[in-house]
Amino acid sequence: MTKKSTYARFGIAAGVLLAIAGATTAASAAAGWSYTGPTGPSHWASIDASYAKCADGSAQSPINLTSSVKRPLTNLGFGYVAGEAGIFNNGHTVEAEPLGTNTSTVTIDNKAYSFLQVHFHAPSEHEVNGLHYPVEVHFVNKATDGSLAVVGVFIKRGKANEDWQPFIEKMLTATANAEDTKVELDWAKLLPSNPITLRYNGSLTTPGCAEGVKWNVMTTPIEMSDAQIATFLEAYSGNNRPVQPLHGRVVQLDSTVNK
Image (cartoon, rainbow, N blue to C red):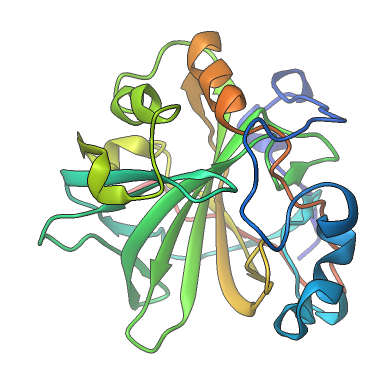
């Protein structure tokens, strides 16, 4: 099959994307590595031997999503359930993790992954035709064999998002301890309703940049108001790793009719 222009068929215009440059973090990063200066991304591999993949890896993330190959893939099977969440600031971003006993899962290629946490990067780490969205959130999931799958969701400017508001309200006051800041979140409602994804094999986007991560970037962004996005940027701005070489990897577009 020939490669197609990513997102064009979904009516996502470049006008909803932002080219953001020169951003700086709004909060001090944890010791060891950062997103700027001598401990920034171009220096991660020299900070610690365990970060070597950040420089010599062949399947690194994020990437510029410019083309894809259409495949009859099965939609991701989300089994995310509502429950108590703990919100915390890890020095590089703000995260939310489930605290209750109910287990949320996502099934990808007939393999189940348990949901671990969601965090954000501003601007987006993945680019679309060389441009950024204001924010990208990552839902991190782990299988019983230890393998990871991340679901990436872009945020664009639009109407206020009530489902995300409990998280947003606590972002600026969250401590380093998830038990200090608890809210109720319906994890499934934090996702776009359209399940179509772009998929590729990549890595973690923070040190040590471990590879073998299954990336699933949703083609439909979620909307948030200007005020909500501004809160993300007040918490952290510029906490995005630059895009990495594709090195021959193929980005697959899920072409399955919505279920």
